[in-house]
Length: 246
Image (cartoon, rainbow, N blue to C red; front, top):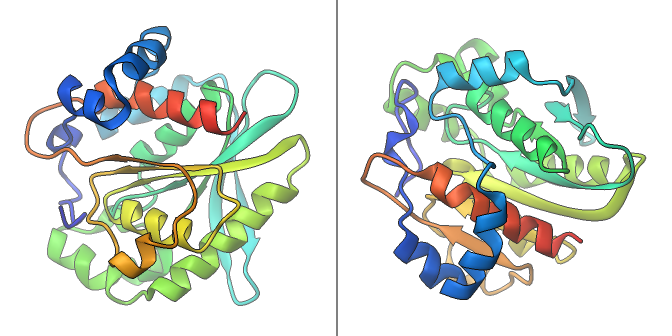
C-alpha cells in the first residue's frame, strides 16, 4: 500500500487475519502472546478515539523537541504505574496529529510504555496546521512531498534522544508506524542500531539497500482490503514490543 489514506476514512481499510499473524510470528507465539492481551484494543474510528482520550485516566501533555533547526510538537503520555518504563515513538499516517494517533499513544501508555507521538507533518499541512484538515488524499500527498526523508529522520532522531533522556526510562525504546509513518519507521530502523523493536502497519517497504541495514527486530503487519481488524493485530504488536523492550 502507498500509505496515502483519505483523511475522512475510518480504519476499515486495515485488516489482519489470524492466518497472517500465524505466518508472522508462528502459531505458538501467537497463542502465547495474544491470549493474555485480548483487552488491548485501539479505537475503531476518530469519534471513538476522541471518547477514549476524554475518559483516559492518563494525562497527556505537549512538549517541544528541538533538533537543532526546529521544534517538533510532541504529544507524550506516561503510564499510570510507577517505576521505570520503556518508551515507544508513534509515527502517524498521512493524517498527522489526529485524535486517533494520539489514542494509539494513550493505549501504549496503558500497556506500560511512555509514548511519544511527534507531529512530524505540521509544517507540511495547510497553513502549517493540523494535517487532519486535508480534504483529500491528493492534498495529503502534495504536503508530504514537501518533506524529505532526511528531514523526517532528523526529527525522529531528536525525539528518540529526548525519550532516552527522560527520567524514569529503562534505556530501551521502540517505534510503531502506520501507513506513511510505517515507511518512515523502517527508514529510521535502518539508521538506528540501538532500536529495541519496530512495528510497521500497512506500509510499502523502503529500498532494499535501506532494509539491509536494519538490525532491530521488525514486525511487519501488511493488511489491506477488508473491514476490520487492527484490534486483532494490535495485541500481537503489544506482545512483540513488550518482549523486545524488557
